[in-house]
Image (cartoon, rainbow, N blue to C red; front, side, top):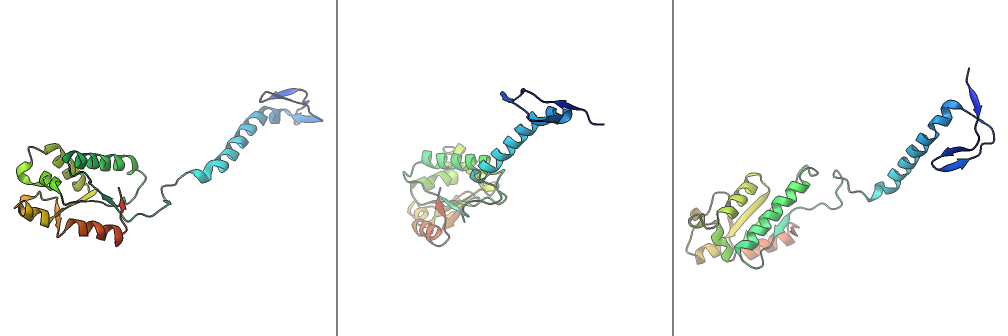
Length: 181
């Protein structure tokens, strides 16, 4: 047997409701809960289209290119720290992170010469760690190495070379579709 009681001036969510008939006792106890659940359900669907989902990115990026404009060691270090921060924040959401290329062809090439390790130890160690995790690909201009009277053997093993840095930058942006990082 179901117990039915009259429902008059019941307060639900701060509003008084006047009933025309009778409401079962069990239903009158769950009306506030149903109201809250319905409100949450509607709010979820209303705001759901603005969220960015990790499994469906808005734009597919083939890779990023780090540009060093000032040709200073501090700029290289700042770029590497930015790469590290980028991956620490977004690595959880990306199954296959896009590659980041760093093409150096100015005086900052001296950072990655073995003879300058003591001077640039922090930068080299950070770059080596990022390269070991395959988060960044560092390329040095061979033309700049010849200008500095150095060869490829004077570079660290995690650093690659390209024949001419500006051409590699143009190739990555125009042919490969890399974006500036």
